[in-house]
Image 1 (cartoon, one colour):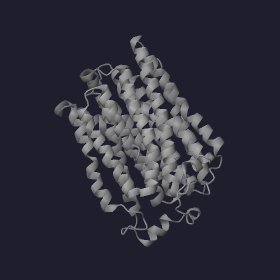
Image 2 (cartoon, one colour):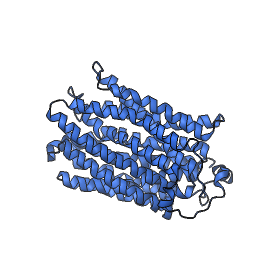
Image 3 (cartoon, helix red, strand yellow):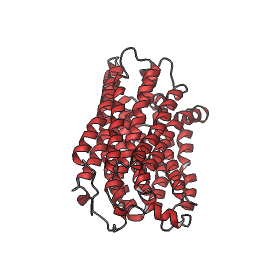
Image 4 (tube, one colour):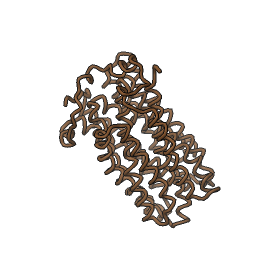
Length: 425
C-alpha cells in the first residue's frame, strides 16, 4: 500500500468520533435528566466542571504516558478506560454520581488528543500534518453530529440508560482494528520503503534523539506557552458549544423544540464544523505547497478563522431568526475547528516528536482549566438570569465572550512566537 498513512488517519478519526459521541450524550439528555433527577443549571454546571477538572489532570498524565509507553498501547488504554466510564453513567441516580462518572470519563478521555497528535507526527511529514489533523479532528464534529440523531432515539425507545451503555460499548469495536493495523511506521509491515522515506522527509527531524524531557524544561520555552495560552483561551468556547447549545435551543429558541426536534439544528451546526476542520487543515497545507513558510501559513489561517468567529456576538440580537442564529453558530463552530486543526499542528511544527504528546497534554490541560471556568461561569450566570426570567441575557454574554476569545489568543500567539522557531532540545 502506497498511502497506508491515511488508513492510520482514518483510525484516529474514528477514535475521535467515539470520544466526542461518548462525551456528548449527557448534553443531549439534559432535558430528560432535569426531570428524572432534578438537575438545575448550577448542578449541570458542576457536573460539567467535574469532567473538565478531571480532563485537565488527565491531560498531564496522558501526554507523559503516551510519550513513555508509545502510541499503540497508550491510545488503546485510554479508549478502554473511557468506554467503561461512559457506560457507568447508566447507573447514575443523582447529580453527585453523574459528577463522579463524568470525572472518570474526563480523566480517561484526555488521552485522545495527545495520542492523536503524536500519531500524526509519527505518520505524516509537516506539509500534510494540518490536513491530517483537520481530518481526524473532524471526528469530533461527526461524534457531536451523531449524538442528537442517535441518543434521542435510544432514550425514547430503550430508556436513557441505554444511550450511555450502547454508545459507550462502540469503542471496543475500534480496538480490534487498532491492534490489527497500528505500529509506528518503522515497524509496520504495510508501509512501503518509498512511503516511509516520504514520512521521514523533514530534514530538521531526522537527527532528533529519543531522550525524555521534563515538564519543567518544556515550560522554559515560549513555544510551550504560546500553545498553552492559545488552548486556554479558545477550548472553553468549544466546550460551551458542546454542552450548552442544546440547552439554548430548548429554552431560549425553544418555540416547541424538544429533545426529539432540535436534532436538525445540531446536525447543521456539526456538519459545518466538519467542513471547517478539514478546510482549515487543507488551507494551511495548500499555502505551504505554494511555497509559503510553514509559520506564515499557520498564522494567516489562524487569523482568518479568528475573524470569522466574531459574528457570533450578534446571535441574540433583535431580529435574528432561529436559522440565522444557527448559521452564525455554525460559522463560529466551524471556524473553531479550523483554528484547532492548525494550533494542534503547530506543536509538531515547533517541537521534536518525542515531546509532542507532553506539550499537547499541557495545552489540553490549560484548555480544560478554561473549560472548567466557563462551566462554572455559564452555570451560575444562566441560573441567575433564568430566575430573573431573562435567560437569553446570560446567553448573550456568553456569545460575546465566544466571539472575542480567538483574536486575543491569536495576538498572544503572535507575540510569543512570531516565526514559530523550532525548539532544539
